[in-house]
Every structure is written in C-alpha cells, then in structure tokens.
Length: 81
Image (tube, rainbow, N blue to C red; front, top):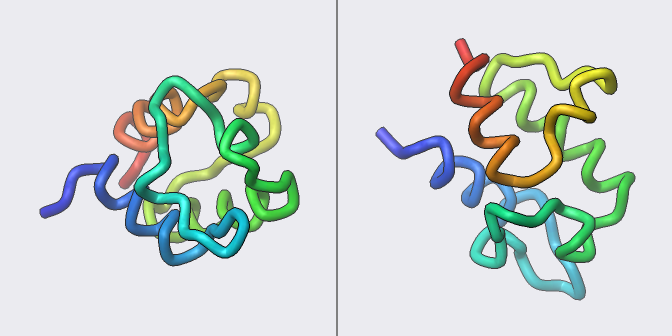
C-alpha cells in the first residue's frame, strides 16, 4: 500500500496543475500549495478530493493547524479512516 505522501503526490498530479504541469513531484513538505503557485480555488477543490480519498473532514477551522504539506500529511495520517 502506498504511503500517505505517495498518495498525496499522485492525487496532486491527477488534480492540480501550475503552468500546465502537474505538481505532485514539486511538493515540498516544508511549503504549502500556494507556495507552488496553486490558486486558492484549486486548493479548495483539492481539499474536497482529499476528504473523499482519505475519508476525513478538512473544515476551515482546521486550516490554522495545517500550515505546510508536511502538516497536511500528518493530519491525514492521524485522522484518515
């Protein structure tokens, strides 16, 4: 089974593009999606993909806890069912 990071990278490649290029390989665990050039609208849409894939809730009040992609991975690992 793929790790959470690998799954996140694959989903990012399938669902997010910046300048016509998938972003999965560009993910830096110390940055967030906006640092990569992902629009806030695309980030919200991607959050919905993650909610479905990992069966978690990424409510806006959780956004303060998730600052980086590494934080997101930790959150998904702790809360996925």
